[in-house]
Image (cartoon, rainbow, N blue to C red; front, side):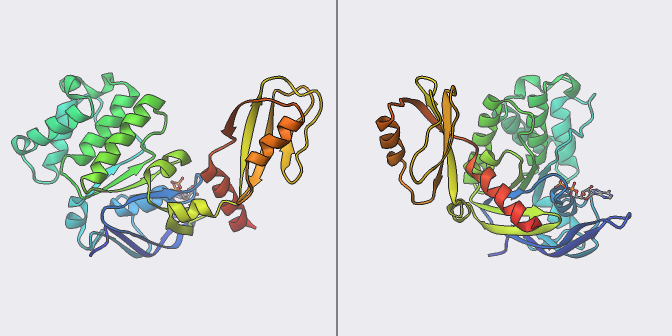
Length: 307
Ligand code: ADP
């Protein structure tokens, strides 16, 4: 089967001489939900820009469903929907018009596009706003409008650049479920995100990019399995009267604190922690992971890459 996305030896040097991509390789299969993750300046937007035809590559190859993004630009773009980070629609144009105008770029008439526009705007909770100028929408609504616009020509591959940046939790969850149902219906989804929890929740496969190079490309489960330790925060019923130690575990605690942190290495049981705390008369009220597991892993990988 043809891959949804194929990038080979992709290299980008900007006019000022800066090498933003140093020969990256990526394959995303049809039907996948894929995350491209990396810190600021890693090269994510450059990669997406090349795929969507906004940035000219220096060398290498990039294809959408087997069509070269430069040589077969129309075919490649027909199969691709892109949701960029910045709102880039006409602020004075009305919501429905923005979506219908976009259809025109793909040779779809307004009449032909109307049904799909209605479906999308309804699903994204924007149908009631269809006659409003886009500048009057809230930030969350503008973001959903960007998604509706990207989907109007029913692309098989959807690329989202930081789709939930600055979006509140409730809206983030509803966007997640929208993206999941889209993916279940067969759309390949590729997203970049800084919300690592988002990648962990949604994506089956992941590539991590840093300084213009792919430093990991694997499935989410194997990536998480590489995690060697996890830090838990235990909230205590009463403040500690003295620092606490647990044999075999790395504990961070101080007298007077009403919580403590325990690092657990892969394979170490966590019930031994509670037994030890019980013996010291320390009662635990609740327990949570200190930070996102993927984030811990990411920090490790990037540190390794820079070393
Ligand atoms: P990301 O999306 O991962 O934050 P970008 O692809 O936007 O990263 O940027 C990668 C690197 O390329 C950054 O160091 C950025 O400063 C540089 N860069 C981006 N656009 C240009 C440009 N037009 N000219 C020169 N350098 C650029």
